[in-house]
Length: 482
Image (tube, rainbow, N blue to C red; front, side):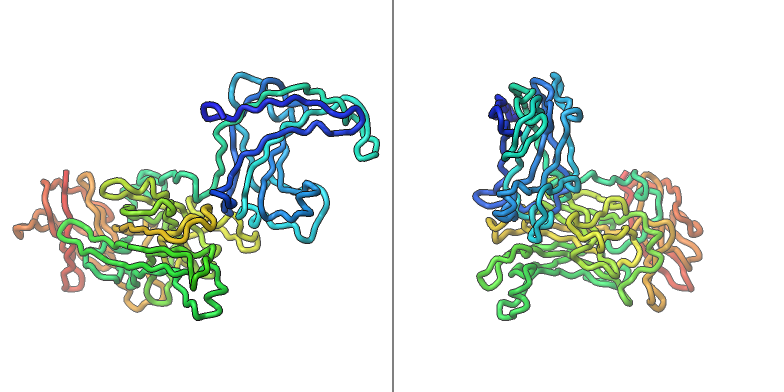
């Protein structure tokens, strides 16, 4: 290893008669301590390389794993991908980048009933093997069988340099943050507030509730002991009330534990902050949603908890197949929190999901939202416990038209507002006849009919928005901070 790169020198030679015997290569270790790496959601492998001469044969990349049987290893029947020499134009002073989709790895050779699925291989990764192969110029024999152009390599030697080996997956890759200016999340787009926690309770604006959810199982239950997702994690939900001109927030504090009854369960060690909706739990007209926006802040996290997984619960899709977005903890520590607006194109299902269970994401049939913290799977069996704490605020739906709660009588849609850059943005104005803006001293400073947005030239301060509907008044408070 030299300055962040692997430098590998090979001299090629073969027996005069035994074919394809000039085999050299190197191994990149992936173990965590003495155990394998669990990266079941691996989507691609990329690396940069350059060579002292053209590779006349091929460049083979294979996956080492503890999931292979001895019979497979003996036959060399492992998952691999081959780049032919003509595609590896690495004989130049410049670095080239090779990217291999995990779906392009295959097993060549004998077929075995015990052939492991790719998911099992990725859960027990041990190494990457990189083998630059030479072509041959003369005929000979291999295992007593004549072969053409299989002896005397055409590549007498090779120096190959490799750097920046990246294992790409949703759980390890950086999130490309969807900002408010992006399509579906523009500041002037109508929005429907789910909760800003101003009232300080667990009920949201759609009539559903916030709750904490964990893997906690019962060691005395045979079913729980057989369920590898059950552990002994604990979590608490607290809600801080807001005030005039500022929102409250919900905090999840979790102690994660993968053990149940003294046995470590590999898929345990998780806790969630979750929210549901009223009625039968479904949102009607949710296909009008263009994004889900929220303010989030990571407070205290063990190093083994690397991300928050934001999931959408949907009718007909089990939790194991739920669409999600990974939010790296490293990007959630800004003072004051970070605003995310997650759009349909940002969601994906687990890579290892069986094709028969895959679906096209839409915001339709939403049952609820989940923010999950979990001990990183890739750490295998080396971490049993961890802690995590984060807070959440100002959760809303960006939308093209109103989304109501399915099968609710007289749904409480909730008047929502947001003030920014001299514009007051309103949603949930159905049924209102007019609005007034009143100062904290009780003086009316503006009056207008319902509209999605109103330009207001107001000095800095806190104001009340008073809406008149059916002889009653609804009051919301907002602040101008310019």
